[in-house]
Amino acid sequence: MKKLVATAPRKAELREYEDRGLKSNEVKVKVEFAAPKHGTEIADFRATSPFIDGKFDEEWRVFTKRNEDEPRGIEFGDLPLGNMWVGTITEIGSDVTEYEVGDRVCSYGPIKETQIVNAIDNYKLRKMSKEASAKNAVCYDPAQFALSGVRDANVRAGDNVVVIGLGAIGQIAIQLAKRAGASVVIGVDPIEHRRDIAEKYGADYTLDSMMCDVGMEIKRLTGKLGADAIIETSGNVYALQAALKGLAYGGTIAFVAFAKEYPAGLCFGREAHFNYGKIIFSRACSEPNPEYPRWNRKRIEDTVWELLMSGYLNCEDIVYPVVKFEDCAEAFCRYVDTHPEESIKMGVEFGGEKECY
Image 1: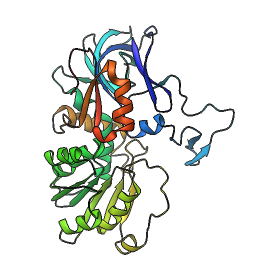
Image 2: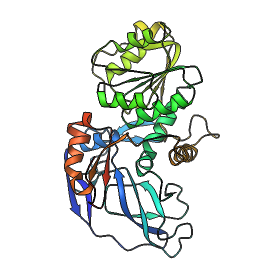
Image 3: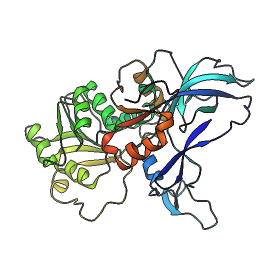
Image 4: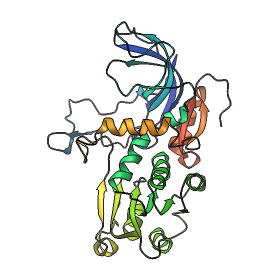
């Protein structure tokens, strides 16, 4: 059996492994479909993550440097790659009662041929029907951040909404904003294919950020009013500057991206000073949730799973391209790292019977 790992920064390969024995609380799953995480995971893969030499101190709520005798946050050589998977249970532990052999399930984990997962009091091990979309299932993670961004931006019926960055999170945010009753939804991305998909699933307009003054175009498309809510998923400094320019007076920017350090040049004067805007740093997995106790991480996950499994959200065109498992190391380097413009969220299909698409 094989798994996808990073052997060094920006180098991926399939490596042989053997499964350990099953514990009484666990199930074993044969994987049929999987996907990486194009945002956070690529920072790990490129060795640019702040968690390599730093760590977040929960008590002080600040990043601190790791001690010299501490292990690094990321160690290459056998670093697992991947975020979500779908498969069928082939074996269950003696104490497992909520699952059976043959159940189709989805959960978090790296890209590999089998998974061993705790199956007792684990709501993250999601059951799904035989007919349910595997592409929708592997969007379980980005859908959580999209939902949190829409909620944190306080999107309401009649609002003008902008989504900047049309990766998986941005594409799902487009669908959620439109279904929430937004009057005008504008998607922003330099990649034509991503703009086309956004328009197919709810965007009224899309803008090429390389070809126009995005902030001014937002004002023009909204009759000079600007956007009531902007969901920024790209982490790009120019995107944030454009958002500040395109924001309506008193509007809200939900900053969903986990951004790197910005270069000099970001200006919080001019429009930012005059338009009385708010920036909320949005993160689905922060606990307690800003709306706790009504909302917490589990409610967010339960909600998006229902939206995905019911077909309320459609991720069929978001998971693109889909590659064979045996080709996924080369594909990861291409579609996630060196040429992300050729993908939205890469899917990996196991079994080797179908051509990639």
